[in-house]
Structure formats: structure tokens, C-alpha cells
Amino acid sequence: MEDLQLPSIDYGALLPMLILFGAACVGILIEVFTPRRSRNPIQLTLGFLAVTAAFVAVIVQHSTRKITIGGAVAVDGPTVFLQGAILVLGLVSLMLIGERSVERGGPFVSQAAITVGSQKDLKQAGDQPGMTEVYPLTLFALGGMMLFVAANDLLTMFIALEVFSLPLYLLCALARRRRLLSQEAALKYFLLGSYASAFFLFGVALVYGFSGGISLSQVHAAVVDPQRSQILLYAGLAMIAIGLLFKAALAPFHVWTPDVYQGAPTPITALMAACTKVAAFGALLRILYVAFDGVRWDFQPVLGAIAVLTMLVGAILAVTQTDMKRLLAYSSVANAGYLLVGVLALNEEGLSGTMFYLVAYGFSVLAAFGMVTLVRDADGEATHLARWAGLGRKSPLFAATFTFILLAFAGIPLTSGFTSKFAVFGAAVEGGQTWLVIVGVVTSMLLAFPYLRVVVMLWLSEPGESTPTVSIPGFLTSAALVIGVAATFALGVMPAPLIDLTRDAAQFVR
Image (cartoon, rainbow, N blue to C red; front, side, top):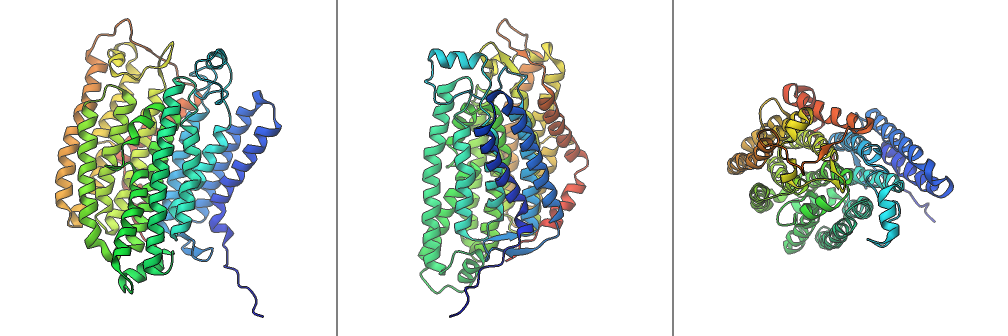
């Protein structure tokens, strides 16, 4: 009898993900065995240590180029870079999640199962400490995102998709205030996300029928030398794309974005806007560049049309918004379109520019949502745009900082927004996608209008009786804002180090 040969496993390459999953499991044990009021500092410290240790492990593995676990996980340049980006942005997100001084008890509900509007619900909204289960859930989500960008076969990618999606569905429902809106957002996200996951899984089945395997190298070989009907290939690619486009918030699969961004606790919205986008586009890059590169002439026009639709929908609907979180949601949709322009360059410059854009946008959007948490009244966050009128007179430092972030979103020079758009648009022109760049430039000018409208409201309007106050940020929120604003400025004036890093990392392994 022959010995069973198990696939070799490089635990060093898997160490960053193992650290996060292990810390998340420890966090669950802490929830069980420690007193409720002492959990928050323990869980927050554990989260910081786990993310930092995982980042150190990524740095140690920065030169590793290998495929492990029987071909299920690929550790290459894009994997290492994107995992590092997820961890850095996740660390800043943890700062916003862990803040407890801006709102008494924190932004999260104490007991999610209590009936909305009941006396117990009103009491816990007032002074009870927020639930700390958010920390292990966040670590599970970050670990799933890291596996998602490293997945080298379609089944592993699907498992990673579910691992980071399920915690996010729960986290969206845990807002301390506006509980019904938060629960509605979570339900919409769960239902639509389940449909997207089902499409992805059906696509995997069809691609398996076409290629006879689920690893990306097998799919690539089958695409180059097809032995079965290509109907299976194109139908499978379309269904897999639906699942990935949903997570990336690309039109017409973006409809969940404004409702979920508005209803979720703002720190969770920041986590999704920064880290989930990195994970979604990391997986999309691997799928298109590694598995389906042989049919680029077939999917390029279709995804190009989706990029145009996304940029137009995001820019036009952002103009009509009256809520700050929904405005930032449609801004996120438009930026997903710009990212897809870089992806469709289908060259190393496009891969490099897309990774740079993901990091630059991640820092800016974390700073933006961090500042949203500070504008408050007696009922919590005041996100209606009309309430922000005159805040520049009441809090000039806040208004100046938020103005800088909005200018970065608009792509003004000396900000990371300009540098990142230049990177993806330049790559697209080199890749023969000039028509997408033209649409991108036009929609960027259109999208500047809602940003500038907010700037005018901040500085040129008189504050009224209903104008909210700007809370003094706690240490964690202050640190997150300093990091986000500093990165937005630094990547605008000195982008070369990060650009060089992305160029060194812009090479997949098969």
C-alpha cells in the first residue's frame, strides 16, 4: 500500500493569518471567562498586539515567493503587499473601533438581542458599556481578508470570502444608536451578500466543469488550451465576477453600499470602506491576471462598461445626497470605478497603480469617517449635511482637516488622491484604455462638486441653533486621524517610496 502523501505546508508563509485567527479564538475565550467591565482594554490590547505581530510576520516574509498547502495559497509580491495594507489599515480601524471617550460606552450596543425601543434598550443606549465581541469579529474579518488576497484556488477564495463576510454582517447590526437603521443595514448586506456568494460558488462549479480543476494555474492552462465548451468558461467567469464586483461595490452591484454605510456603526463603515475594498480588488486582480488572462480581450470591454457605469453612478448620485455617510458611500462607489480602470490596464503598471490607489484611498477614507464620528448632538452623530453648515466658524481645525480630506478625494494636486488617480490613469493609457481615462477625468470633475459644496457649507455658512458640536477626539481617534491625514499628505508630496514598493511587488506567481 502506498503511503498517503499530504501536501507540504509552509507555516511561516501562513503565520500572519494564523496569528489573527488564533487571537480571534483567544478573544472568544476572553468573552467567556473574564468580567464584562474589564474586557474592553484586554480585547483592544490583544487586537493591537495580534495585528502588529501579523504585520511583523508579513515583513519577515516580504521576499517569499511560493505556493503552499497543495496550491491553495500563493505568497507572492501582491499577496505580501496587500496583506500588509490590510493590516496597517486594519490597525487604524481598530483605533476607531476601540474609542470609548467620544461617546459614553462607545459606538456599539451593549446587548444586541434587546428589543429596539424598549426600556432596556433606552438604558443601554445611555450608559452601559458596549459589547466587546466586536474585537474578535474584527480579527476574524481581517484574517479572512488576508486569506482572500492570497487564495490560489477558487474554493479557498470562496471560503475566505465567507470568513470575512459573516463577521461584517454581524458588525453592521451593532450600532448603539439608530438601532433599527443598523439592523436593516445588516439584513440588506447579509441577504445581498448571500446572493453574491451563491453566484460566486455557481461560477466556481462552472469553471471547474470547464477546466477540470479549481486552482488558478489549472484554469489558466485550460483557458490557453480549451478542451471543453467555452460557454462554461464565460458563464463561470461572469458569475465569479458578480461575487467580486459586489464586494468591491461596483455598479450595478453597488446598491447595498449607501444603506449599509449609513446604517452600520461608523467605525465599521470605515473598516469596510478601507480594508474590504483592498481585499475585493486584491482577489479581482488575482483572478483576472492569473486565471483568466488568456481571455482578456473578451472580458475587458464588459468590465470597461462596468467601470464607466460605476464612475457615472457614483459621481452623479453623490451630487444628490443630503447625508454625509451616504455621500462618502457614493464617493466610494466612484473610487471603485477608478480602481477598476487601473485593473483593466492589465499590465504591471496597472497592478502597481491599483495597489497604490488602494492604500492611498484607505488612509483618506479612514480619516474621513473618523471625523464623522466627532460631529455629534444629543442623539449621537449628526450626519445630515445641513447640520454641518457653519462648522468652520465653530471648529476651524476640524473644518480645515476635513477640507483637506475632501480635496484629496477630489484629486487636487499635493494630495494622495491626485497621485493615485495619475497612477491608475497613466497605466490605463499605456494599456490602451484611453476611453476609460477620459470618462474617469470627466466624472472626477463632476464628483468634485459635492465635495466643494461641503467645503462651502463648512466655511461660508453661518452656524445655526441646530448646528452640532465637534467633540474633542480621544487618544485613539486622534491617532487614527493623524495617521490618515499624514499619509494623505505624504503620499501626495512624496509618493515615490510607496510607488517603488508597489512596482517591486507587481508580479504574481503561478
